[in-house]
Image (tube, rainbow, N blue to C red):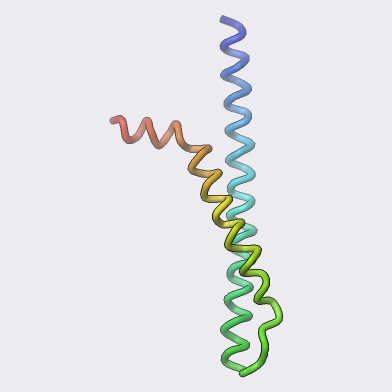
Length: 84
């Protein structure tokens, strides 16, 4: 019985870490994506070469990783909601 409680507590701590990492990846990915798009569209408007366009290539994968980790971290809550 005590072992089950210990495993459940470790599971909840791991889920909490995954959710924190997911929100961090989502935030950083969103910021980098916005910077990349703003730089791209301002350079198109000014007819110059974009200098921060590479941030889109970093931001998009971070957004995908963050969304995937959030879906994994909240899977139990989502399934419980769908069950009712």
